[in-house]
Length: 118
Image 1 (cartoon, rainbow, N blue to C red):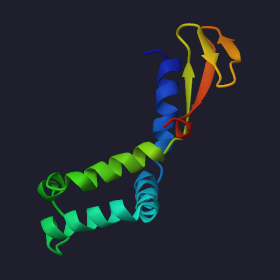
Image 2 (image 1 turned 30 degrees about the horizontal axis):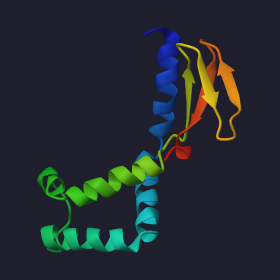
Image 3 (image 1 turned 90 degrees about the vertical axis):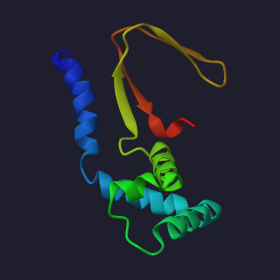
Image 4 (image 1 turned 60 degrees about the vertical axis):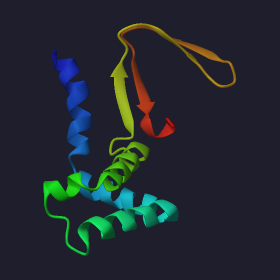
């Protein structure tokens, strides 16, 4: 990796490292509150596996696949770093929904809005 590659990778990681846990948990709670069926199913899993105990071990976490899936899906929907900069290694044509085409040459920097992807 050259300095530019390291910078391209390192900057988002540095940004993501600031309050990531609080960010991820906040979005998890909001996403659960917005999806009561998912919240109910998760509560059922937590009650059946933990039986009121705190989640304190890796083994407990491993026995909660729905919780893990909820965390991953929430993180996918609301990534900590919503904009990603990339330098194109080859030229691309970007086709918009209305049919317009934008040609972008290799070596140009583009910015991807990760929250815009389904």
